[in-house]
Length: 373
Image 1 (cartoon, one colour):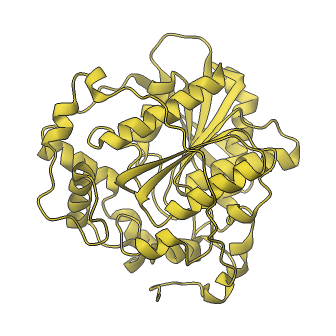
Image 2: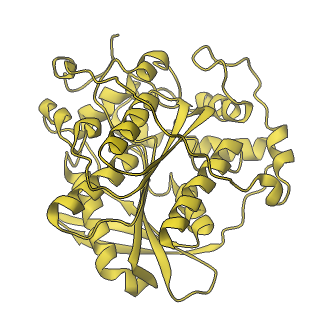
């Protein structure tokens, strides 16, 4: 398989392939349906694609396909662009907004308040956005949230829906982290920023009406990777570990021949050729692909908190999420692994238009809430 536009030559470094998926216990938690939320099943029913299903996703759900069709009409594959151009083009979140407009989907009313906070980190500062539910409490659990984007693109604005929905569904404060990204800031800057934001939250949760005894982690894609690595960094440095962690389609393996990377090579919005593009701009040297902070499936995973892994079927990262689940369980970690059929990478946070996202958000929220008890 030829990968295009790779600014760092990785091919010799991918010689160790890890594909064994093993058996996983899949736990499906009961989730509220849209019928319990203003009868919005009728909204889902009227969202339909305009074209046949793509060849790379013949079983794609209609609502998911409508989002992808819209995204394809306003953007181009990430690996064909420079980082600046990739950051400037419309995102999956923008496609969701257009689908909502096209199908007259009402914009959900936010039931959170937000405030920004800059904190000092090694070599500079980063920004946090703090979401507080409007439920009038003086003490909330806290979820530190890391957005996706391959450590190169996207911001807390791009993933605002995910953070806001988690705050509302968990009745917890969510601290969204605007970590620094490549190519301006190379590995392990984003990982160190993620850990610094977690440590800041432990030390300062009481100043934002948070409970320092109830701090968990959540993140998507590259952010899902950092959920696990922050827990590893806490374990290895003697810092209090998170109470729980939710990793949504995490980056977890550098193997190029996993089943999903081969099957969903040309999927959208994430394709297999995009993966070395992201790593090429984030990693300082090619050999860093073997770092346990990047290649989670070969890392020491013992002693980590209980974990929820949410996966998308039509996603090059599907296999490594499953492998990570198996490896965590082998290390003695309790795992709730949930694979959603018919959806792609980035579906989480799209609950306004994709019913599987509503269920996935509820699974994540329920697991977090149970951990806070």
